[in-house]
Image 1 (tube, one colour):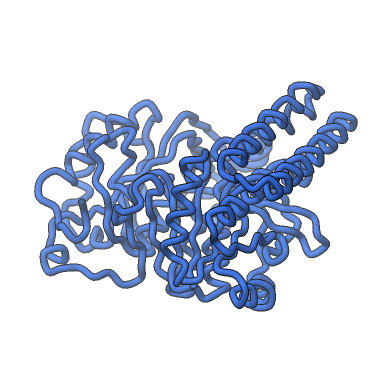
Image 2: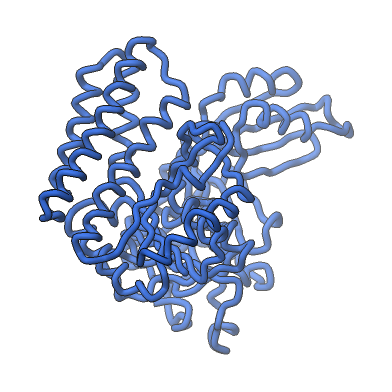
Length: 465
C-alpha cells in the first residue's frame, strides 16, 4: 500500500486532474490512498472570504464563495459526462458553498472570527476538490471510494494548527480504511483537515496536506509516500533565483528535514517526521513531468564511490524570508543562571517558535517568523533585559550530510559573500547545516553566489542531475 499526495497546483484545473488520474491508474497494483489538497489558491480565497465577513464586507465575502463554486462546477462539467453523477457533484458543491454562506452570515453578525470559525472556512477547500476528483476518477473507470479524513484524523482543539492523536489515527485507519480495499481499488481522502473528538472541524496549519499524507502513511505502514507537486523534486536551490538549479536525486531524512524547516517549499517541515519514525521512503515528483525521476528521501542512500568521495558535500541551499531578529542583552545576568530559561519561557508563553539562536554570556540573538505577538514579547523581555528588534531579515541555510567532516566549508561560504553583512551565524547544533542571517534584500545575490561556489563543475551523477 502507498500514499500518493497531490498538492494544489497538481489539481488546479482539468488538465492537471487528468494527469493525476493517469498517475493513479499506473499505481493501482500498489493499493493507493490518494490525498488531495484544495485547488491552487482556494484556501487563500476561503480565508479572504472569512476576513471580509468579519470586516462587514458580506457581499464581497459571498462573491468570493460564488467564484469558488463556479470554478469547481466548471472543472466538474469538463471531467464528468454522466449526467446523474454530475448532478450529485453539483449538489455536493452547492451544499458546501451554502454552508459557507451561512458561516459568513454568522461571522458578519457577531463581528468576530475565531480560529475555530476560520478552520471551518479553510477546511472546505479540500472537501470541494475531493468531491470533484473522486467522481472524475470514477468517470475514468477507477473503482474509487471517497473518504472523509475527519473520521480518522482526530486532533486536539488547537484550531488552525491542530495536533493529531497518532495512536487514535493508527487505530481508526486499521478499522475504517484498511477494509475498504476489499471492495475498492483507490481510497481518496483529504489532506490538511481533521476533527476534534467531539466532531468539530480542525486544520493542521498551512502546508498540512503533506503532513496528513505522511501521518496516514505511518499509520497504514505504507511502503512508500509520494508527494506530487509542480517541481522536479528537491532542487539545489529555488529555481526562481537560480534557473539552472539541479535536481537532487536522493537525500537523507535529516537533510530533507533541515531543508523543509529552513524554507524549502517542496515539503512541509513536519512531513518527514512520521516517515522517519517508520522508515518509510518519501518520493517527490512533478505532476506535470510524471516520467521524471524526482527525489528519493530515505534513511539509507545508495551512493557510488564517486559520490562518497566527492568534494561536493552541499546538497541544497534553502532560505526563509520575513524573519525578525531579537537582540536581547542583560548585564544583570552576568554569571547568573536562568537567563536562557527566562527568555524562552516568554516565547513559550506567547506560542512563538524560535528558528535560529546565538548566545554569549550576557546576550542572546534569536529569530522568529511569526509577528502576531511581537509587542507582548518585547514588553515581557524588557522587564529584565534590553531588547533590540531588527526586521526584514532572511535565514540562509546550507545543508549536506558530509559538511562537518569536510574542512573549509565555512571559509568557502563566507568568502563567496565577503562583501555581504552577516547578522547572525549558527553552526554546531546540527552537523549537517550551516545557517546564517542576512538582510532580506541580499538573498538573491547570496544564493546565486553560493550556488556558483558549490555546484559549478562536475557533480556526482547518482546525486545530482
